Length: 246
Image (cartoon, rainbow, N blue to C red; front, side):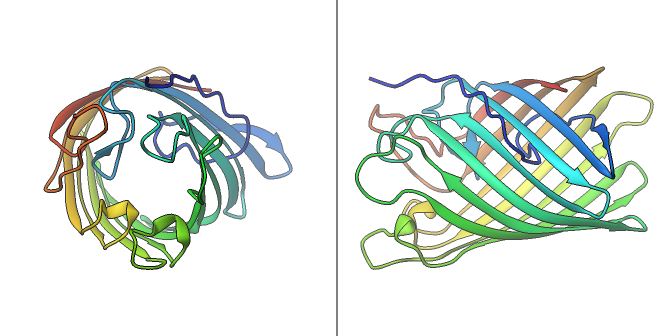
């Protein structure tokens, strides 16, 4: 039977999957921000981590005016993701710098799955992204590379994994609506690529009102991953979300 868990994370993370947060000044060049989100389906690189069911997510981050930041983010997941674990907790440390309209962001993610069964399910993944804003639009390219480690194996030793992605967001002038497009490719084989490389993409929109964010997106992949319940976790679907920043 699918385990259910509401994850409330108290730590430090950039809340990548949640609603944008308004940072609170702590003095000394430090600021803190957090967010909580409910999604109709938790998709990680196009693959459902919640068996196409609702998931609860939360994150909090601490950043310094120098550009360094640390944080944590968490989500409820289905137990097929990581040997029976019902939660994913991401720990992150990185550095972000903006010059002109360009932002460079680099750091390291550690994926932790509390309560996972026998075997190593946790893994480390460095990342780097470059984003440029021009007018109401922002374009970003990202590379995530997980070096060889036992959590990624598909039976042929310790495999590594590379994920390359491009994102484009465009704010509609005079409205609180932003259109978002995403294209990514996972190079395998590894556990993260469901045994082979695949491509994921999405198109959606977000609507911001005060400290709330509402989103809807169409997500799809060209891969196939059937969950123990018989659902195709990589099949196209519409994902809705409601988030609050604090």
